[in-house]
Amino acid sequence: MTATTRAQQLRRLVEDNPALRLLRAGDSSQSAAAIMALLWEHLGGEERRIGADELQARLEADLEQLRGAGFELKGSALAYLSQWRTAGYLIRRPSPESRGETYELSSGALASIRFLDEAETPKQTATESRLSSLAAQLRQLAIDTDPQSGRRLERLISERSRLDAEIAAIESGADAPLAKERAAERLRDLLNQASVVPDDFARVRSEFEALNSLLREQILESGSSQARVLEDIFRDIDLIAQSDAGRSFRAFTDLVLDPSIGGAFEDDVEQVLNRDFAVDMTPAQRRSLRQFIYTLKEHTAEIQQVAVEFARGLRRYVESQDYRRDRVLRRSIQDALHSAVAAAEVLKPYERVGLELALTSVPLTSVGMLRLHDPAEFESATPVIVHETSEADLAALIASARLSEIDFGELISNINSVLDESPSASVSEVLTAYPASQGLASVVGLLSLAVRHGTVEQSAEHLKWVGVDGSERAAEVRTHRFTGSIQ
Image (cartoon, rainbow, N blue to C red):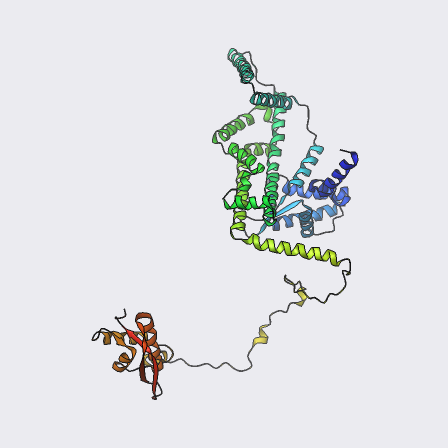
């Protein structure tokens, strides 16, 4: 790779990477220092997620103090939160506990804060404990990957001999515990490693989010690889869990949730904190070490839930066929962009084309254009007439109801009475035995009941009844016959 190629790659990295953008925020050391301090103070410690309203209130108070200290910070807390979210420093998500939203640092912002923390308090890089740990891990890797079983057995026997020698020394009293200085050095190394582990969860979540977006993009695109994605989802394969990030995280989860490891870790923490070399630990360090396993389990459960939601969302997206609609929309947008490129050669951007498009979003207007509600505008000029109430007449209410509704109860009783004396009866025969008390409404009710509970024949019958106005009525209809009583 040439220096030019490397320079171009690094330039893109500096421009696109949120961590590097944060380190040079505003191209001003003063702005970068203020932004870093605010993010570090409120989201870089034990509290990694804060409600949007609470964070805004905290920033407003801090901004006033920073301005008093000479920092040029002209924006409001809400404006800075929006800028930082757009720049990739913050991630805004719905709150799992309320209807609001929360803010947390992105993986890039965490990397920047970790870099500045190490720059402010440099760690010893050539400590005995770190070299011993590397040597032990390298030796174990060599044993586990040796293709020759004889050499693996030889190394294991050598390791057992070393452990036997240590056991014998302890039993004879010739072995002394680790010196206080070396123990404190190892403890610092452990704390440094433990402080970095929670930051990895932000990167894992970012990987899952990127993978979810990539899978949705592949679903929308055409091609054999994308078709395979659809087939896998239809076959109920969890592509999120089967990815490299998913398999790695599942192995980590199995280790964290192992009860034997958790119990042994807590016992070891309790013993270490009671040693004399741990007296210099700060309360925050002690609290962090005690809650380390709990913190890992809490973050692990959260990432697992995120992965499950992404997998379910992908499956719903495919099964609901929503991807077909989005695919059509995507192609339409691509066609429009292609046409726009061709049209740009002959049309200016500001040239009128005679086409009006309706807005698809709510138009923004000034608060001053809102008209307040004035109750006086709805006052009536005429006095309200008060009608005195009187005792209801049951007979009048029944008569009023019969004028607006068909009395099916009366009609069913009449039909059953006729059928008690004959195996079947037509609507005409029922009307002959029981005249229509509601006029046309009774006739319509009988025909309706015959359709539901009787038969309709091809022959015709003549119906006669007296309307509610006293006039005689008649009609020719197909024969409607009742063949059984109606319950």
